Amino acid sequence: MMVPNVKQTVFFVAATLLLACANNAPATNGGADTTAANPAATAKNKTIVFFGNSLSAGYGLTPSEAFPAIIQTKIDSAALPYKVVNAGLSGETTAGGLSRIDWILQQPLDVFVLELGANDGLRGIPVAETKRNLQSIIDKVKAKYPTAQIVLAGMQIPPNMGADYAQTFQAIYPDLASKNKITLIPFLLEGVGGEARLNQQDGIHPTAEGARIVAQNVWQVLQPLL
Image 1 (cartoon, rainbow, N blue to C red):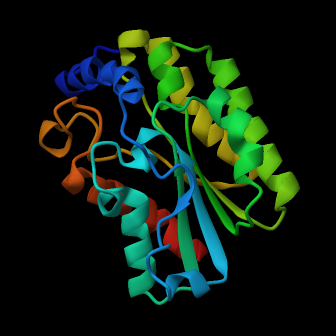
Image 2: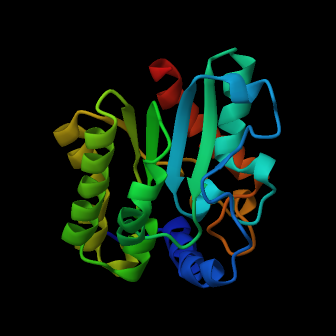
């Protein structure tokens, strides 16, 4: 059995607020183009879609502070021909994501970043169900855009739900990445999860500084694909 450390315990206690926060969440981008205000950006001919929950949506942050918007800034600085679409939705589960993926896929895309599963883990949803939903989302993206690059953002939960559950949950992401031959971000919140100074008062949603670290975790995996 794993013994939870202090950071894990803090992370878990705060994480239980994630679903409650979602019920009172402010309006999110919900699939909005983060570059829409920039006429030059709209001319870009390739699209990266971030499909996730409140972490992608940037709960508690300004739109420009959410990590997908930071990725757009990095892309612009590198003069790469991509625009970012933030399709993050606070409170989203893998089942919810599966129910709205067809709508998201109505827009052309070249890179699809899948960031879902954390809310499943907090609810104790069976791991097999979470894995099945993620696989179905991946299948739909591949069927609609077979040449698109798919990036899967790994997530972890503390062992308070049970060490076996936490370990099995964590294994979902490398297993799916290997099976589908897609790119894996090992842990989206690396360096941020459980770090009080990098999270908002709820202890789970990153601050602006935390979001910059999350963006770097994503960027180091995403950049070589662009």
